[in-house]
Structure formats: C-alpha cells, structure tokens
Image (cartoon, rainbow, N blue to C red; front, side, top):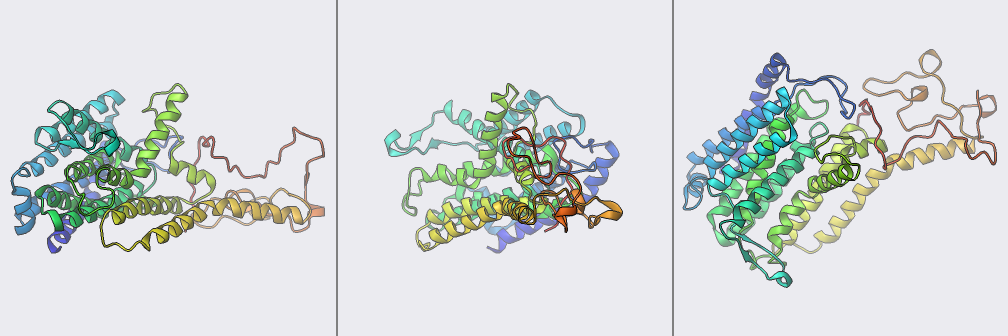
Amino acid sequence: MREYLLMALVAAAVTYLLVPLVRVFAVRIGAMPEVRDRDVHTTPTPRLGGLAMYGGLVAGLLIAGELPYAGGKLAAEGQGKTVIALIAAGGLITLTGFLDDWLGMDALVKLAGQIGAAGVLVTFGVSLPWLPLPTALGGQTILDSTLSPLITILIVVVMINAVNFVDGLDGLAAGIVGIAAMATWTYSVALSKDYGDTSINATAVIASVLIGICLGFLPHNFHPAKIFMGDTGAMLIGLVLASTMILVTPLDSSSINRFPVILPLLVPVAILVLPLLDLIMAVIRRTSNGLSPFSPDRGHLHHRLLDIGHSHRRSVMIMYAWTFLFAFAVVALSIEGVPLVLFPLTVLLAIGVLVMMALPRWRARRDLGGAEGRGGLAPAAPTGPEGPAAGPGRHAGPGGQPPGRVRPHPYPSEAPGPRSVAAGDDTATLSVLPDLSLSAPRQGFSNPETPL
C-alpha cells in the first residue's frame, strides 16, 4: 500500500511542478487559441497541460520500477514490457495531441495517431487475449492473433475519444479519469488478493500513477483554470486508462464476484459510463444532422448542465458524483463481503444527485410563480444606477439578477411595460422567461459563472 501511495505522490508532484513551466512554454509558442462560440471560458487560456502529465507518467512508472514490490510485479513474466509500452505509446499520443493543440490537425490525421499509439501497446503485449461474453452468447471467447489486436485497438481508440469528448469544463476530464482510476485500482487490488496475478498487480501500479497525474494537474485546472490539458492530456490519460482496463479484463474472476462472465466488461463500462454515453450521444447527434462525428458543438452533457442553470463548478461536481456512483457501485457489487446495504444507499445518493440537477428549474419556477402571485410577470429592474450590480464573478442578468432568475417589480401596478399576455394571443411571448430547454444548446454562450 505504501508503494502505491509513493508512486501516486511522485507522479502528482512531478505533474504539479511541471505545469507552470509548460504554461510559460505554451504562451511563448502561442498555444492559446481564441475563444470559440462553443467554449465556456471567456479569455484565451494556454493549452498543452498534457506535456506535464506525460512527465508525471514517466516519473511515476520509472519510480515504480525501482520499488521492491511494484518493480517485481512489473518485471514479472508477461509484464516486463508494460512500462516501455506505456512510455512509448504515451509519447506518440502526446506528440499527436501537442501538434493538434499548437498547429491544428485534421480529424483523420489525429485518428491515425490514436490508432498508431494503440498499435504500440499491442506490439509490446498489452492486448486482450479473450473476450468475456454472457453464457447465452457462448461464454468466454478466445481471440486469435487477428481479432485480438483489432479489438484492443478499437477499445483504446474509443476510450481515448470518450475522455477527449468529455474534456469541456475546467477540471472535468482530470477529475472523472481520476475517479475512474481509483475504481480500477480498488477492483484490481481486490482481485489480486485472491489471484496474485501479475497483470492485476501491474494494473494497480498503473492506476496509482494515473491517480497521481490527475491529482497533480487538478489544482491548476480546476475552475477558474490557469491551463487546459488540451488534446495532449485528454488523449494521454484516455490511453493510460484504457491500458489498465485491458490489463485487468482478461482475468476470470468468477470465484469472487456475483456476475462472473460479464463483469470484466461491465466494470470498465460502468467506470467510464458518462464519457461513453456522451460520446455515443455526440456521434448520433452530429451524424443525424449531417455532420462529421468529430465536428465540435455545444451539445455535450456538461454544456446541457450549464444551460439548465448550474454554475461551472456545480456542473463539474454533478459529473463527478455520477461517475463515482456508477463506478464504485459496480466495483462494490463485484467483490464478495461488501454489505448489500450499499445498494439502497447508492440509490439514495443517485436520487440526491438528480435533485441537485433539478434545483435550477425548481428555483426558476418558484420565482416565476411568486411573480405571478404578485400581479403577473414584470420586466426586471434595469442594471446600473437603477438596479443592483452584479457581484464579483457573477454574471448580471436583467436587473442584476443571476441568469434564469426573474425579479418581480415591488409594485406590480406601477411596473413599466406589459405584465401579462392578452387572452387568445397565441403569438405573444414572455421575454423574461428563462431558457430551460435541453433540446438545443445556446450558441455563443459566454461563461460568467455563479460561485458555489
């Protein structure tokens, strides 16, 4: 346990200390593009944070190789090339992301870089030898020398893009992957107690380093972010997380879990359920509109949370909570000895997260209902001398109110302008109603945040 903690601390410290240097480098070479319509930040921010994360990865893996327990597991038969594979594949995907963040890159060229990095993992032996399937579909299926590399590359590329797609808010990708790595570490350590398999222990080592990378980067990236990881970092941590899933998946854990055959598939999917769901929804949304699956938009899950009315930080925390619930609930159910009381507790926590998500809608309806009870909806007071000013860090909506709130006039009968819609006027609209629609993301949304 102490060695796992040491590896995580080394990776975190190196990443944390390298970020300021990388930030200066990014500013000097101009790797801080202008703000786009779909962006949620309002000022140009340096990218390339993934360079510091790669430094943390290399440092953590090299330290692991020198430790008595971790080094022995990594040097064991079948795992001797794992460190080389991750450093080489990580270097290739980091280079691909760096060029994309700095100069821009065609989607197909970037995809080729992802496939190349996944191919490096396969070349060094990080591959899926068999595929766990339900009994109705034939049970475990041994993969031949052709199918194994193809399926492994597919899994790695999908996970890389899933993490890349979810990297849209400050601290979101690093936090979600960090939570996923913690769940993977927990799962692999629990299995290693009964199996002692070197690939399981190697998974725990890599997951520890990945946890450290994410924790070391988060202080610089949490809202308001001083630097973004960019494609450089998102694709890197997606690759490393995919490698942990592959290394732990080929194990028959039927003696210590309650759904033995499909569990090796279920745990990775549960751990990455939000990024994978966001990826699937984005592909369907874009292709149905005649766009490329790689064309950017503002329809991601985190954008929708912002559009509902959540602040930047609260949106990130909600995504963290969902990731934690999905990942650790399945991991807990996969390990014998875990009290079943955790299941209803998980359901209650999920309900709590849903309540958090719905709060902006309820508050908006409450405010609108209160305004109607005082004589109808009235335009909010003007900003400036006639109305309250926005506080620090807060965006002033009409009348100095936060977005989505409507302040009723203190004397409805004296309120300027119309207070109600004439009966039978089907074309009339109330401009003061907040836009709570989830069907179409707003364009050109700036990101003035409401602090927690």
